[in-house]
Image 1 (cartoon, helix red, strand yellow):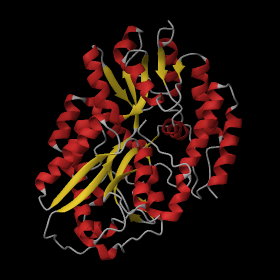
Image 2 (tube, helix red, strand yellow):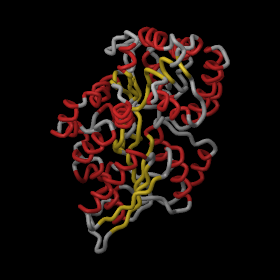
Image 3 (cartoon, one colour):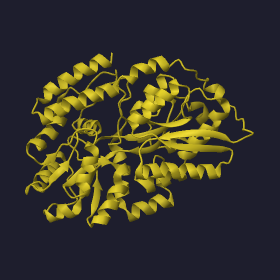
Image 4 (cartoon, helix red, strand yellow):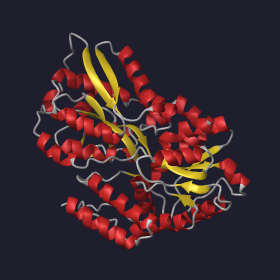
Length: 426
């Protein structure tokens, strides 16, 4: 899943490298134009269609901006990208522009690794209200914007409607947890396939907790998942696993396993990022079945976390490079480029003006599956950004996995995860 990252022991190192030089944000707004082309490096995560999108946009930017030349470099997963960025920053060799997975924005900013974009936004009077408010929650640190939404997503429900219809199931559902469990049971009746392949993924768990009426972290920055909603979210997974109606893969390839099971007709439903839409629809077309998309099912309410990456400027650049980096970030997140990325990958259009372009309106009319995640933003919320949350994620995933696969107690899992979380979130 392209939704979260972990830092492990590298978090401690960030406190050491925080002292690396950073120019003052207000001093960076010079308006100076370089005499020679400014060279920038841009690091990004994920390959395939997402990687192609990044490379295509950088090529277009370079053609339109002869005074600024950007080199795009693939760095792997979000985990790998963040670890490499930390190491490069410590070595004073960081890229000028990179991606932060949204839950990491505050950590990078508060450790002095990224520059506030607020002076540049104010200087250019950038219309922040044009960015979808449901995607802006992970952009602010101490009331200043440090990151702009770029390739953003929510988890959605994918349905192999061909398989559903063969089983006599209405492809317009399931809309609730109970209906999802019913569909999973019917799809699994003959033993040849599962209702869904569902890894223990923190992104999904955050959604389930919200749908059950709970929250992950409270306003004071303390764990709040040890609740009735938190337990109900675990039990939702456990009940289907114990009934044999879902497959729960583990390890680094769990997300890929889920996608391959769905693509190969081994599961009829899948929860995954809207960023997988183009890939899944292309495969479905090649293999002769239909795919539809829907909101994640509701329990007490609908609710999903947002995900994906924001663009950030690394700290410590001289004035000319700051201006060039800002020009690149502003262009990459502008209306036309946002619409291009959304059509090319399936990621959300993060600007209202992008959704309203003729290009996107035509896409929604011809392929309504693209609009599901946009409509679902009504129920979206930001991910927790408290320092130490990556370690909380590790603890939760480990404890939930143990509860589901080893028939443990949901309450014991939450108690253990809370104890581990409190040790981190002091």
